[in-house]
Length: 456
Image (cartoon, rainbow, N blue to C red):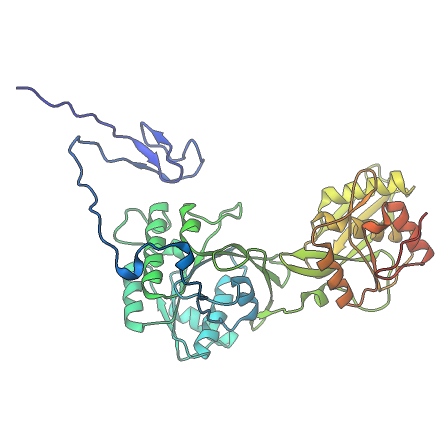
């Protein structure tokens, strides 16, 4: 009797990139992700059932793009202005938002404030915490003033139980903290495994779309700062936000890395206080020192997304006899500071080989873009000369190795922010090179906006 030979294609495949292997490995050989290689079902040769075509309903039938309704989806404000700015104006019904950040940066505290603001506005909110008990969340809510009757707490790590809470509470906003602590009975592995994260995220996205229910998911990050779990997690959600900040400072920034409903270059600014997280609607005022002008200071205009920020750069130089002088930087790029010091020594005749140089920013903000070059050069030069520049001067420009002052991105927006803060004199690419900038600052013959720059 003739037998049918069945081709066996059993093996293992990466769920992220599709790379295949004859045996199981812990790390994908193509995309280098851990825990994404899973076993394929053995092909038995039996014909699989074909997917049957289903006639779509009249309201979901395909139509010409010119006939698609362009009515804007109504947005709901969260009650936190800086969070609304990053989201593009507020929460969209059915949107799924992924918020990631370093441990202890304040993700849970900020979301508790968002939940309390929404509950205060009359919307019922369900806060499902898989990392803390309901009593722990209540204690933090008392400290931050987030106690509201319409804010419901649930300490759960089972996805089915969380869905049951959604059915019972019927909320207008759901917060899940965090997706790596929730597990589903429909998937193998412990909570946090890539397959579990994928199943939990896909289920929450489906529930959000079916019920027009906005859901905010908290995600852990790896030591490299990336969202932990499969990359598919970021593809499934509508908005990906990153909450970041230096633990040694109170300042926090909320950035949008992906947004299907708005721009991705918006940045929200917050401050950690003893009572929780507070919004900072005008952060430029925090990064400027007060009092009389001091030698070694210069104001530059940084760009955080669409927001221009005035940042004061400070420099201090001290004579030293050691063969290798110290170069200490904080808040600026060390490589660019080294380049600026080389330019000052070779092009401006400044002797820095026998000086310890310290460069820092005020307020803990990071100013690492090339637009900081000119402000760093002006601050270091006047620190060595022990002279102060007027408070009405701001420097914006990138320096080339030929000491040329180059234009920077969004220069008009930076100048507008400088004018709003009262800086009547903006030193920029109009001065052509570093020597021209230093000469004009020495003579104090600073032109105002719109005036011609004198030649040297």
